[in-house]
Image 1 (cartoon, protein in one colour):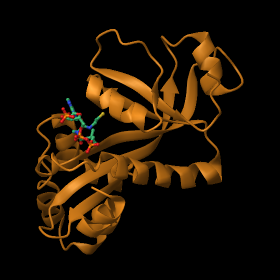
Image 2 (cartoon, rainbow, N blue to C red; image 1 turned 90 degrees about the vertical axis):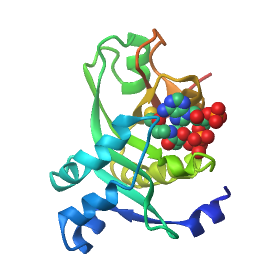
Image 3 (cartoon, protein in one colour; image 1 turned 30 degrees about the horizontal axis):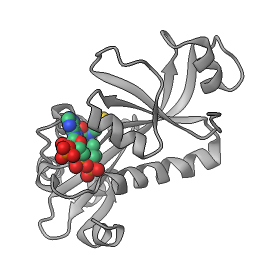
Image 4 (cartoon, rainbow, N blue to C red; image 1 turned 90 degrees about the horizontal axis):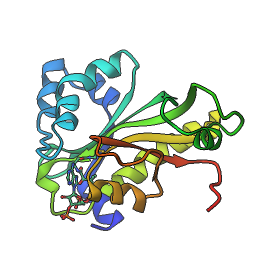
Length: 192
Ligand SMILES: CC(C)(COP(=O)(O)OP(=O)(O)OC[C@H]1O[C@@H](n2cnc3c(N)ncnc32)[C@H](O)[C@@H]1OP(=O)(O)O)[C@@H](O)C(=O)NCCC(=O)NCCS
């Protein structure tokens, strides 16, 4: 799906705005429950059960795409400020991430906590548009605040890792068969 087709098919809203404009929490919850993701139940469960609480407690910000035809949730992402704990990361990589020290325990960063589309859109290649919007919002915060990288925990599935790599993220830990792999999109220049 081209960017223009994507923009015509879906409307984009901050969840905070949806909460403000709908008459009750039950109605917002019902709307969020139109999002179904059988490939990733954590992604589905977060939107159904936690996103509203995280929003009201200012833990994160969630952004939702509504299908203009059905008014169902087609996709969403959740972003937050975060800290990367460096246990298990080599001092060489810590230096790269921190930019200054090679033994720091925690490094501030931006987090993409959740990102994905609903099952109904399986056939539509829209992931890159969703991720581009996600990164664009973080870019504006980064521009104002600084910050060295965007972090996410990618499901350790080759196609998911390839999707993020194609969109300028790279892994910062070895694949040892764990469920997820930490990946970053740096704002600093990486020497090849
Ligand atoms: C990841 C995602 C946004 C990419 O969207 P997209 O660019 O439109 O591309 P697709 O949905 O076609 O996904 C690309 C491939 O990855 C596979 N894939 C996507 N998510 C997957 C998952 N969670 N587990 C296993 N495979 C997955 C797809 O089946 C597809 O495989 P195919 O090429 O053989 O058809 C989207 O697939 C998605 O929302 N996945 C489910 C949620 C998810 O897992 N999000 C990532 C959390 S880290």
